Image 1 (tube, one colour):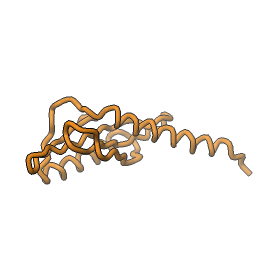
Image 2 (cartoon, rainbow, N blue to C red):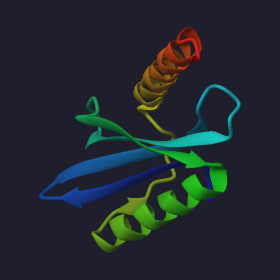
Image 3 (cartoon, rainbow, N blue to C red):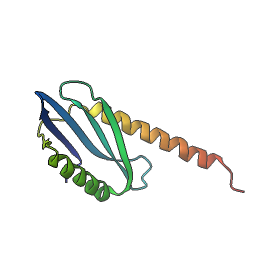
Image 4 (tube, helix red, strand yellow):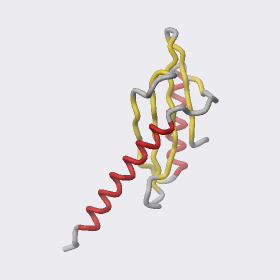
Length: 113
């Protein structure tokens, strides 16, 4: 399965879009996350979400595959057009990495008793 995917659905003359990417989380721990942006095509995304963490890309790919299967049952189709919300998705990944760094810093700053 690919590490980036877009899906679209036509409903009442409007096109909804979901973009997904799988990316490693900073820290070289083998942790990966699945990022989603959703909204109306041609506009800014109305939601950006993350799922995970997952231990390795294969686990994240498996979850993405199950989500894509479910969405196709609800009328979504894989869209071969380039992704348009990459900046939003990578912004969410930066937040995840920053939060992770803060938590690791807290652990390192706390002396063991």
